[in-house]
Length: 104
Image (cartoon, rainbow, N blue to C red; front, side):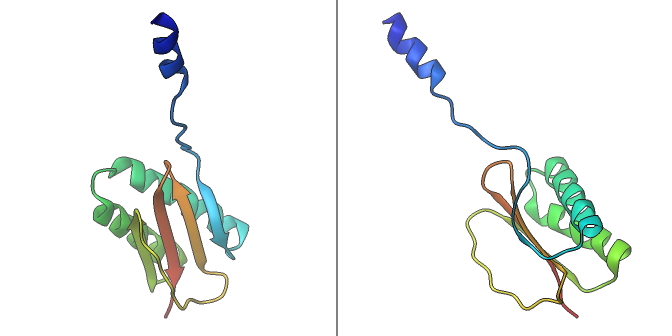
């Protein structure tokens, strides 16, 4: 019986907390800034994705010019038109997806 319980304890679900970038064409400086900003907002507003997206958008608009768009959530698909070198698609904390793009 103790072996069965020990086996269950050993089987833990692994959740990656580091950002997993699925696609980007941003330059390195912008990419690092956008990733850090996204992680900070999603950690701070983990129960409100809409507010996290708003914070990310407002900060990207201030730092890199206006017309940024942001989607934060789980289980969505997307197809967007964007300016070259201005898109970032990443996952954070398992299945939380974040998409940032600029389109004027």
